[in-house]
Image (cartoon, rainbow, N blue to C red; front, side, top):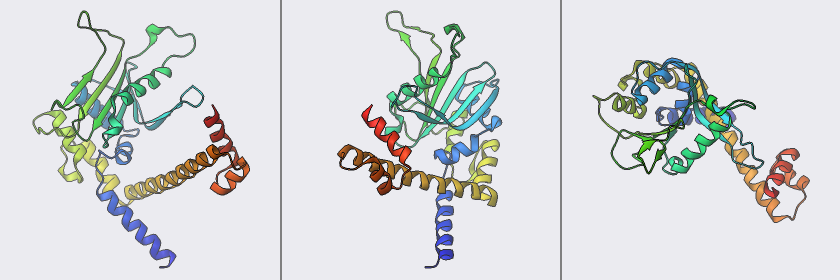
Length: 270
């Protein structure tokens, strides 16, 4: 098969994969909501049961670096900030493992580390919301929403530290409920079947127009390249652990930059 036919086949396979995407896939979800204030306001107002929330900023795939050397960092699907300064981390999770309750705790703590600058007082801490939209009912009580807040056990009263975690049941079905309609739209493969027009327009663009499909194809290519790089790093870590080769030899064998191999070695020794 010549290069052109290989390229055409790869693009055909990618377009077929795009057809199967819904907003429950973080690649499409991130593109739909990135810098889209209208769509993000809709999402947050529905989930929070409001109609007055105004979003000032929304960014897809925002990275939070762990300040601790060798500590785990995160890249959140959607970062948003509202007019009151509240911070929102919105995640979609298909896999059960990705919705582990300790992951929500970690996301919340990572957001907190970035919220105060040196010299600011704790009273300046804004509220934060970590919102997990999960493909299944991971908490198992057949509810549309699960609100997680700290409570004083002895009194049963809300602690009020401003930290909130919300799980949204992506399998919830009720077309008479705003949350049910929202989750219906998140499961839809076609824009014509969606309730909310602001979401339908964006899904139609990325899945059904030439310009949107080109962007999606580029995303798929970048993900493929990232997977290859991660596999190289994993191989390098194994070689470093064996200790039988120099870092220069490992860099040559894995086709990674020497500085990157040195960094991996430093992390393993930390």
